[in-house]
Image (cartoon, rainbow, N blue to C red; front, side):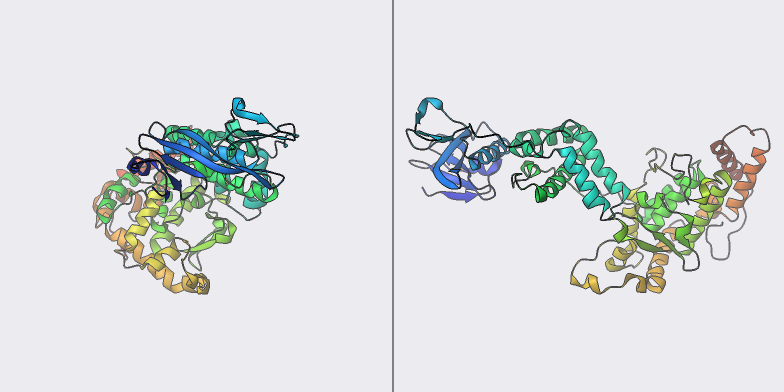
Length: 488
């Protein structure tokens, strides 16, 4: 039976039919030299390659790896990569000394002329660049030089220094020649931290290795991360619909920290990534142009953009600024969303799911979802979210020319759709009214000042904010403003 070519995986191997007589080979379409020998009663993984010395072909060998029915294709592929790497250096990966016949010179040839073992007396190659050295070079020469964001750099650093902690002093060449070690680590990270982090760590290793190989050509061409079986990744379906918004607004209104309330609301209204929004500064806000500049989003400074602001978004920022100046006057000079952190701004946006069901990137997904009922096109939604525009037409679009009128109108349509879903909650729901009702911010700050000068003088700012909110929820309601917008 003639040899065939297939993508070798567990299912494909199990489906291979036994020949009526003799045997045939099923060769892999991805890894040259890797194949399955199919006989009448067995299936065996094997590799085939040419042994060379001084650039000259000495012999062609075929080395068996293991039983195709007892070994997984994942394990066999990893071993095949290691064997082929040794064969390319003139070394037999599984020599049998008893079968070798000594020959003059530096090589030993077997009786059946199918295996050659190159003399090992030559000087060993240097170990070469380590993972830690390669990472430092990649960070300085690629990430920092290209203006990648601090969050992006921190993500890479976390993978190398935490997840690959035991490999930091390991030469990259050693990882490339022992792919089973990489597969095992990917499996461990997946089990301990989940499939997304497992894949992400391997992408980091792949990027660092590829960058290092540009300057260190002795590194094998096969990237060590290429041997892993990537975990299945599905886009998270966690966005809210219009019917979910009233409950979410009640949860946000019940949060004790008023600045965190405004941060979550602005995340929803803008669709901005939370890590970029946390570092927003007063100098980035231009009320005349009604924009908020994001200087270092995902992708670095080259992806900087302006967020057009709707009326609701402006009121949200004004509330955040007023609360910041009262509770954190020193930090408010530098940051919009202040906090008692080392940096002075919000450093953690996670909430207990029982307290707030949706936050972070889930609000970004909600923004994109609600853009459709708001009548915003996919193209405009991409621009508002600072997504890359596919196709050759992207280079002809001047985003800032659309910003002043068109994109702001689209932003306003999304904000209106979100607030229309609340109905009359800002007037009849006491929790939401204490947050978004007319003059709510002024009353909250005045209540905090009274508490500050009264019995709770010794409490910290968080206690004062809590007292202010409690006081507001027992205050009488008042009518809505002319435009039915949340008050500042």
